[in-house]
Length: 468
Ligand SMILES: Cc1cc2nc3c(=O)[nH]c(=O)nc-3n(C[C@H](O)[C@H](O)[C@H](O)COP(=O)(O)OP(=O)(O)OC[C@H]3O[C@@H](n4cnc5c(N)ncnc54)[C@H](O)[C@@H]3O)c2cc1C
Image (cartoon, rainbow, N blue to C red; front, side, top):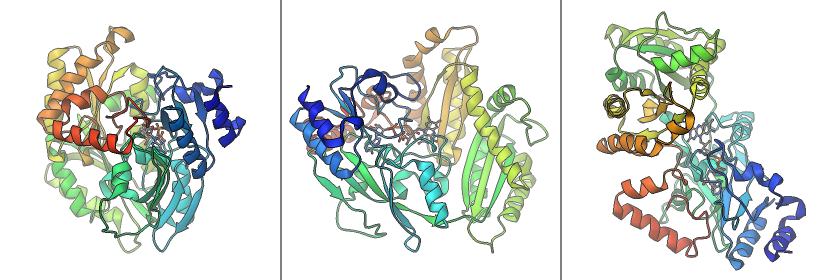
């Protein structure tokens, strides 16, 4: 038997060392089915000590390791290459909440905990773990930290790295770095958790994390508004932040085309406003205080925005069912986007105040190059993060359309760069954006990233071919 496989079986037991292609299939293909790799074995360790043992064994055999969480990443970061040399290390069995401390507002969870389960565990302790994204029923906290995931509540609570108080990480030599004491303040040198957050498995394997919790909201206010013009969005955002006492959690831009897609593919979904504007915003605020009337604050704020001519119409949900129905519009947009055909997608950010100008210039640049283009620009405008997607041309087959990806990326990312923006605001680099990162990241920053990688992982065994 292959000595590496025998070693892996000795560490995790034969049941948790998968070598048959059929058993490996769900692990070696990415969520969107864009990347298909091969693994020498898929290993499923059950403890941090087993992760350490696997890493040491892999090093002896010069075998690369690809860490994998829920495999929902959209940049091919968790898919091995086709050489079949790598061990795919799935964290899914490290799925225990080690501790919850409501008074410290913190919890310590293993990397393989599914995000939705952590939200539930926090809720049961009368606390909120605010990280929230559509993949939350499948993605894992280790993957969330490794990609510095964002999602719907970044505006108020920050992204995954902001919610992290400390990490336990197995380094590429098998050593363990552990800081799970959940301190709020610790000024004793370099903040290592921030190095590993967003490192996409290229520097080590996150095995556990200390995470921030918050008071649980007791009330929420959800609203849908019609913007008088796209340019008003940052003005309205500033008004809402002030008027809602910084209790704003989501501020999501929805374009007319997106809502039309939602209506087309989700018949029966009632639009909450009288008419459909070119640009709408879904707004959500919540509060943990019974002394603060979030509903009145939302109404007052939007009343003032109506008077100022910033919005032309507004609906504030008066029940939980109405809130959910408003959020359903956004989900239906995502579903409609998939059903209408293929997409060439961009997950970009620019300074918040520049979002309208970016969207207009970005659309103009794409339409200039491809007059038949249908653009869907939507998303977390409150964070300056826009999903800027070109939808498959009506009279063109999928393969021909997808073949334009590189050309479209260049056009879009050139505009992003003009605005001083980022070509990846949420989904990371993985293998999808690696070449582009190398063209667009300032040389000094890229060089420093490479030097850090060489220092921590001199043999390039941790997720090679990804990110740097
Ligand atoms: C429907 C859908 C909606 C999404 N919405 C959002 C969104 O709103 N915001 C957002 O930011 N992302 C979003 N994503 C992308 C994805 O869910 C996130 O990137 C998520 O954080 C990935 O977590 P995962 O556990 O699935 O990681 P994986 O896909 O398994 O891995 C992602 C990367 O992290 C590395 N990694 C995973 N676990 C570890 C670990 N324990 N230690 C070290 N490295 C590790 C992998 O090697 C890989 O490079 C969405 C994806 C889908 C499918």
